[in-house]
Image (spheres, rainbow, N blue to C red):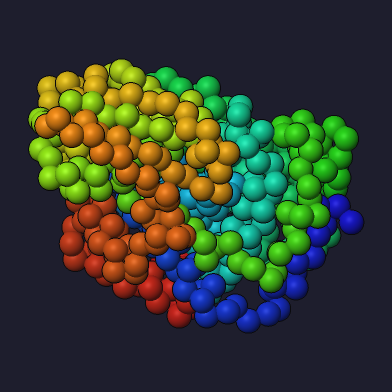
Length: 441
């Protein structure tokens, strides 16, 4: 059976089974974290620019943008998916080098609102999207990530599976939806190696593509069922020959949604271990940033390739600059949204420290990527030289954010946009999402 067919068969079986309580809890966490990322991105470019560009598709339809504006399903998926990836605070599935929430939840919520689905149906759709897409992403591996942006490519599968679940497609049509969306998969690494709005658009486009493929399959549109694993298919064209049997072996017996990384910093996740390690070592040494003479960071190669910009000029570039975010953390104590305000980008103390930060590939840590995201940090100051190994990132499955920490993140990001009262009401409704009879309002 094809990869698409195997995924579809599992999804149809899963639809008839009770959701384990732990899995349901983690699905709620994923949707809460998605909303935490959505609101700050919804009031920034490119989401606001997309509202102008797609004006003909807004103020009608039953789906909603973040702040309540009506939209067609595809426009809502595109704009909300883009917004949720803009501030760089959305979730990560470590093994797939992939942000599943931005495209998957955006697609699921838009369709759930339009169809008046229940909260439980939404959560089931999110679970299906995460389980199928994370396995495809993990199978495509590091070779895929060399040129492709997984949130744009793999995100298509998450969005499509979620939408197909909400449409209750039978296994044959579910498989056709996955086959069709495979041909939509796109998003290049080069798009965010310099200042650009393309990266969040990848997530939004994946959400829109997933919805489109599922809606088309519901009406009988077909694809090539072997397009994922075929000789000229997705796996061979965009990776180095994935092992699909291994990828799907645990589908239905283990749930990847229970092993998500929730971000603790507002920047590229490849810089997190360096930030966490630098802050831990600074605290251990009892240093003020002005006393630091040199910082050396050893990490995995991809972290330097993607987030090694030595001289960022804009907020978008700074989010992908390990020297900038580490220096900002050491000077200001954290890397939150304020780290990318114009005055902070130009901060003399941060810029001065950046010039004393060196990056290098650590062969041992590089060999452990992507299953482990680590950094070795060395700080020289006051005639002392101390080293620290940060073996994982705060927020990773082996060092997870608690529910209380996730709530604190939500409030920090959402309150400035909609106010404390509305944010708290939203948060409490999300924790009770599976009790909602309809998401239309």
